[in-house]
Length: 217
Image (cartoon, rainbow, N blue to C red; front, top):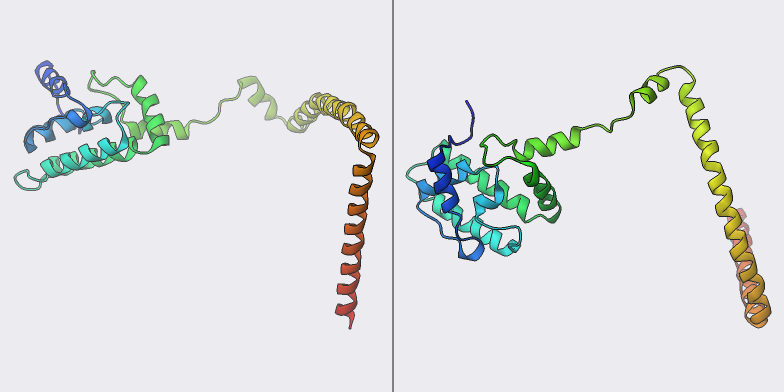
Protein backbone atom coordinates (compact mmCIF):
# COMPACT_ATOMS: atom_id res chain seq x y z
CA UNK A 1 0.00 0.00 0.00
CA UNK A 2 1.29 3.47 -0.80
CA UNK A 3 2.38 5.60 2.16
CA UNK A 4 1.09 8.73 0.44
CA UNK A 5 -2.03 10.44 1.70
CA UNK A 6 -4.92 9.59 -0.68
CA UNK A 7 -5.87 12.78 -2.53
CA UNK A 8 -9.07 13.81 -4.26
CA UNK A 9 -9.77 17.08 -6.07
CA UNK A 10 -11.53 18.42 -2.96
CA UNK A 11 -8.62 17.62 -0.65
CA UNK A 12 -6.16 19.18 -3.11
CA UNK A 13 -8.16 22.41 -3.06
CA UNK A 14 -8.22 22.35 0.74
CA UNK A 15 -4.48 21.73 0.90
CA UNK A 16 -3.75 24.59 -1.51
CA UNK A 17 -6.05 26.93 0.40
CA UNK A 18 -4.11 26.19 3.58
CA UNK A 19 -1.01 27.67 1.91
CA UNK A 20 -2.53 31.12 1.48
CA UNK A 21 -0.16 32.52 4.14
CA UNK A 22 3.51 31.57 4.16
CA UNK A 23 6.58 32.16 6.29
CA UNK A 24 6.06 34.24 9.43
CA UNK A 25 2.39 34.79 8.51
CA UNK A 26 1.65 31.06 8.24
CA UNK A 27 -1.48 29.96 10.08
CA UNK A 28 -1.74 26.39 11.37
CA UNK A 29 -4.83 24.39 12.27
CA UNK A 30 -5.47 21.69 14.86
CA UNK A 31 -3.31 18.56 15.11
CA UNK A 32 -5.46 16.22 12.99
CA UNK A 33 -5.86 18.79 10.21
CA UNK A 34 -2.14 19.50 10.13
CA UNK A 35 -1.23 15.80 10.14
CA UNK A 36 -3.53 15.20 7.15
CA UNK A 37 -2.11 18.25 5.36
CA UNK A 38 1.52 17.26 6.00
CA UNK A 39 1.03 13.67 4.85
CA UNK A 40 -0.74 14.91 1.74
CA UNK A 41 2.16 17.23 0.88
CA UNK A 42 5.01 15.08 2.19
CA UNK A 43 7.14 15.45 -0.97
CA UNK A 44 6.73 19.24 -1.11
CA UNK A 45 8.92 20.42 1.77
CA UNK A 46 8.11 24.10 1.21
CA UNK A 47 4.38 23.39 1.41
CA UNK A 48 4.81 21.18 4.48
CA UNK A 49 6.46 24.00 6.44
CA UNK A 50 4.35 26.72 4.78
CA UNK A 51 7.38 28.65 3.54
CA UNK A 52 8.60 29.90 0.17
CA UNK A 53 11.99 29.67 -1.53
CA UNK A 54 12.82 33.14 -0.22
CA UNK A 55 12.01 32.35 3.43
CA UNK A 56 14.91 32.73 5.87
CA UNK A 57 16.22 29.70 7.76
CA UNK A 58 15.16 31.10 11.14
CA UNK A 59 11.55 31.30 9.97
CA UNK A 60 11.79 27.75 8.61
CA UNK A 61 13.01 26.53 12.00
CA UNK A 62 10.26 28.48 13.77
CA UNK A 63 7.53 26.96 11.57
CA UNK A 64 9.01 23.52 12.21
CA UNK A 65 8.86 24.18 15.98
CA UNK A 66 5.25 25.35 15.79
CA UNK A 67 4.21 22.32 13.75
CA UNK A 68 5.91 19.89 16.11
CA UNK A 69 4.10 21.46 19.05
CA UNK A 70 0.74 21.20 17.28
CA UNK A 71 1.29 17.60 16.16
CA UNK A 72 2.35 16.71 19.69
CA UNK A 73 -1.15 17.58 20.95
CA UNK A 74 -2.76 14.83 18.84
CA UNK A 75 -4.86 12.30 20.77
CA UNK A 76 -2.54 9.38 21.39
CA UNK A 77 0.62 8.47 19.52
CA UNK A 78 -0.03 6.57 16.30
CA UNK A 79 1.66 5.82 13.00
CA UNK A 80 0.24 8.89 11.23
CA UNK A 81 1.47 11.20 13.98
CA UNK A 82 4.96 9.71 13.84
CA UNK A 83 5.01 9.93 10.03
CA UNK A 84 3.97 13.58 10.12
CA UNK A 85 6.70 14.42 12.63
CA UNK A 86 9.26 12.60 10.49
CA UNK A 87 8.18 14.54 7.38
CA UNK A 88 8.48 17.86 9.22
CA UNK A 89 11.95 16.98 10.53
CA UNK A 90 13.17 15.92 7.07
CA UNK A 91 11.75 19.02 5.43
CA UNK A 92 13.41 21.33 7.94
CA UNK A 93 16.76 19.49 7.79
CA UNK A 94 16.88 19.89 4.00
CA UNK A 95 15.67 23.48 3.71
CA UNK A 96 17.98 24.93 6.38
CA UNK A 97 21.04 23.29 4.78
CA UNK A 98 22.29 25.53 1.91
CA UNK A 99 23.69 22.73 -0.27
CA UNK A 100 20.74 20.38 0.32
CA UNK A 101 18.33 23.22 -0.36
CA UNK A 102 19.91 23.83 -3.78
CA UNK A 103 19.59 20.12 -4.61
CA UNK A 104 16.00 20.07 -3.40
CA UNK A 105 15.15 23.06 -5.60
CA UNK A 106 16.46 21.09 -8.59
CA UNK A 107 14.28 18.15 -7.56
CA UNK A 108 11.23 20.36 -6.97
CA UNK A 109 11.59 21.87 -10.44
CA UNK A 110 11.04 18.43 -11.99
CA UNK A 111 8.67 16.76 -9.52
CA UNK A 112 4.95 16.42 -10.24
CA UNK A 113 3.54 17.35 -6.85
CA UNK A 114 -0.01 17.92 -8.12
CA UNK A 115 -0.13 14.45 -9.64
CA UNK A 116 0.22 12.81 -6.23
CA UNK A 117 2.82 10.32 -7.52
CA UNK A 118 5.98 12.39 -7.21
CA UNK A 119 9.21 10.52 -6.63
CA UNK A 120 10.39 11.33 -3.10
CA UNK A 121 13.33 13.66 -2.67
CA UNK A 122 15.40 10.98 -0.96
CA UNK A 123 14.68 8.50 -3.78
CA UNK A 124 15.68 11.16 -6.31
CA UNK A 125 18.84 12.04 -4.35
CA UNK A 126 19.88 8.37 -4.14
CA UNK A 127 19.28 7.91 -7.86
CA UNK A 128 21.38 10.98 -8.67
CA UNK A 129 24.26 9.62 -6.58
CA UNK A 130 24.05 6.14 -8.11
CA UNK A 131 23.88 7.25 -11.75
CA UNK A 132 27.18 6.33 -13.37
CA UNK A 133 28.91 8.58 -15.85
CA UNK A 134 27.88 7.34 -19.28
CA UNK A 135 30.54 6.78 -21.95
CA UNK A 136 29.83 6.20 -25.65
CA UNK A 137 29.13 2.60 -26.57
CA UNK A 138 31.82 2.51 -29.25
CA UNK A 139 34.43 3.67 -26.72
CA UNK A 140 33.31 1.07 -24.17
CA UNK A 141 33.62 -1.64 -26.86
CA UNK A 142 37.10 -0.48 -27.88
CA UNK A 143 38.36 -0.41 -24.30
CA UNK A 144 37.23 -4.02 -23.91
CA UNK A 145 39.94 -5.28 -26.29
CA UNK A 146 43.38 -6.17 -24.92
CA UNK A 147 45.93 -3.39 -25.45
CA UNK A 148 43.42 -0.87 -26.76
CA UNK A 149 43.21 0.98 -23.44
CA UNK A 150 46.99 1.55 -23.42
CA UNK A 151 46.88 2.69 -27.07
CA UNK A 152 44.00 5.05 -26.31
CA UNK A 153 45.88 6.62 -23.38
CA UNK A 154 48.98 6.99 -25.56
CA UNK A 155 47.02 8.76 -28.31
CA UNK A 156 45.37 11.13 -25.83
CA UNK A 157 48.77 11.91 -24.28
CA UNK A 158 50.26 12.69 -27.71
CA UNK A 159 47.34 14.98 -28.47
CA UNK A 160 47.79 16.85 -25.18
CA UNK A 161 51.59 17.13 -25.50
CA UNK A 162 51.52 20.05 -28.01
CA UNK A 163 49.47 22.12 -25.56
CA UNK A 164 52.10 21.64 -22.84
CA UNK A 165 54.79 22.64 -25.35
CA UNK A 166 52.87 25.81 -26.25
CA UNK A 167 52.51 26.69 -22.56
CA UNK A 168 56.27 26.18 -22.07
CA UNK A 169 57.10 28.44 -25.04
CA UNK A 170 54.74 31.17 -23.81
CA UNK A 171 56.29 30.98 -20.34
CA UNK A 172 59.79 31.42 -21.79
CA UNK A 173 58.65 34.30 -24.03
CA UNK A 174 57.15 36.22 -21.11
CA UNK A 175 59.50 35.33 -18.24
CA UNK A 176 62.94 35.69 -19.89
CA UNK A 177 62.39 39.32 -21.00
CA UNK A 178 61.06 40.17 -17.54
CA UNK A 179 64.18 38.68 -15.98
CA UNK A 180 66.55 40.75 -18.13
CA UNK A 181 64.36 43.83 -17.74
CA UNK A 182 64.69 43.51 -13.99
CA UNK A 183 68.46 43.20 -14.25
CA UNK A 184 68.65 46.33 -16.43
CA UNK A 185 66.22 48.51 -14.48
CA UNK A 186 67.04 47.37 -10.93
CA UNK A 187 70.55 45.91 -10.96
CA UNK A 188 71.14 46.66 -7.29
CA UNK A 189 67.94 44.93 -6.24
CA UNK A 190 68.80 41.84 -8.30
CA UNK A 191 72.32 41.67 -6.85
CA UNK A 192 71.01 41.98 -3.28
CA UNK A 193 68.46 39.26 -3.93
CA UNK A 194 71.21 36.98 -5.27
CA UNK A 195 73.41 37.76 -2.24
CA UNK A 196 70.58 36.95 0.17
CA UNK A 197 69.91 33.71 -1.65
CA UNK A 198 73.62 32.78 -1.52
CA UNK A 199 73.84 33.63 2.20
CA UNK A 200 70.79 31.51 2.92
CA UNK A 201 72.26 28.62 0.95
CA UNK A 202 75.57 28.94 2.85
CA UNK A 203 73.82 29.01 6.25
CA UNK A 204 71.71 25.98 5.38
CA UNK A 205 74.82 24.10 4.23
CA UNK A 206 76.74 24.98 7.42
CA UNK A 207 73.77 23.94 9.55
CA UNK A 208 73.55 20.61 7.73
CA UNK A 209 77.30 19.99 8.19
CA UNK A 210 77.06 20.83 11.90
CA UNK A 211 74.11 18.46 12.38
CA UNK A 212 75.97 15.69 10.55
CA UNK A 213 79.07 16.20 12.71
CA UNK A 214 77.03 16.04 15.93
CA UNK A 215 75.37 12.80 14.82
CA UNK A 216 78.77 11.20 14.19
CA UNK A 217 80.09 12.09 17.66
